[in-house]
Each structure stands twice: as structure tokens, then as C-alpha cells.
Image (cartoon, rainbow, N blue to C red; front, side, top):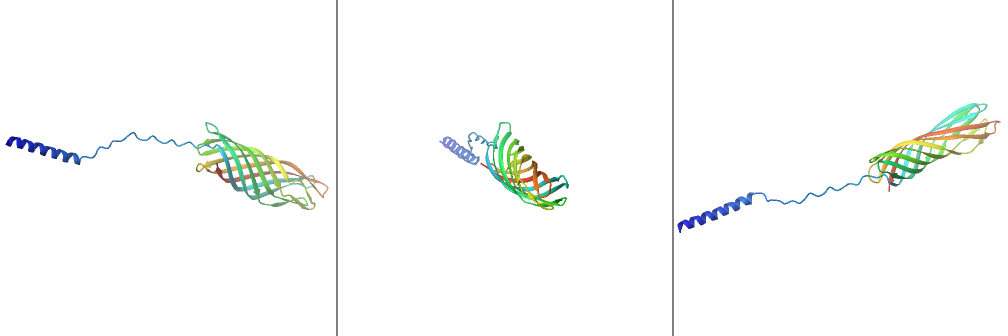
Length: 226
């Protein structure tokens, strides 16, 4: 009997000790398969956009007279405007687009052409451009070109007075970079060259003044992409 009692006591003690040891061990955690990574869609330049731009403009206006020779007006001014356009991005990163903008330009300058005082200044410049670029994810490098229309403020005084067509028609070439800060907001820095043809002004003097004009513009833009 004593032997059976000792054996039972040893069995109970062994069970209690095993339970205590098991309670000290960390609980086993059964984990499932890790969640699949969420795919982040790549940024796309495709879509419509609107924006505002501001920068600096330099107008070079060369006036020529058969008697007095020629003189150049260099007009520097501030430029501010608005733009709208559409881009389409192909697979491989190539981007094509079309854009319209209108820019108001400040600045006036007067030079002399013999006895004639010639005051020149540009008012409005409008561009209709096609763009071709290559996207490095959120950075877009591009070249652009198209049609330019401008209104000039030209005044002759002194030895002669007169007026002529204010409108200018020509072409533009440009280069720039767009950078998408996020999926909607884009910042831009670009350079545009506008080249216009010759035009003639009839004055009170017995001569006709011919004028050739070009414009260079550096500007930045803030754009919202839809």
C-alpha cells in the first residue's frame, strides 16, 4: 500500500512540475501567410491640365528706314498668363500633347531712328503649341513648337508720326521640364523663342519704316492635372 501511495504521489508531483514548466514557455503563435504587397500604380502623364505661368520676356524689335538706317529696341518686361492643354503618354515613356496659352507682357522702350523716335513694347502673346517629350516617371523633358500671335504697342514721333499693324504672326520653339509633385500638381520651367516676320509702317516722312521682331521668354508655371 505504501509503495502504491508513493508511486501515486510521484506521478502527481511530476504532473504539477510539467504544468508549471509549460506555463513558463512562450505561447506558440500560429501565423498565416504574409499579406501580398499592394501594387502602387505608376504615374501617368495622360490627361487634361490647367495652369498659370509667370516669367521674364525680352523683345528685340529692329526698325529700318531707307534714309535713317536701322535701330534696335530691346524691351525687357514681366510676363504673366494662363495655359491649358492635354497630354497622352505612350508605353515606353513617350508623351505627346497640345497646349494653348495667353500671356500679358509689360515693358516699353524708346530708341531713335534718325529724327524719328520709335517706342516699342509688347502687350499680349498667345501660343498654340504641340509638345513632344520623354517621361522619367514624374519628370517630363520636352520640346515644343507652333504658332504665335502677338499685339505690339508701336509709336512713332519726332521727325515723323504714323501707325501700322499692331498684330504679329509667327512661330515659336521651346524646351522645358515638367515635374509632378504628386498625382495632380505639376511644376514647370521652360524657355520659348518667338520669331515674327517683317511688317511695314507708313509715316508722315517720305519713307516707310520696316520692322522685324523676335521675343525670348523664360517662365515658370504651376499646373493642375485632372
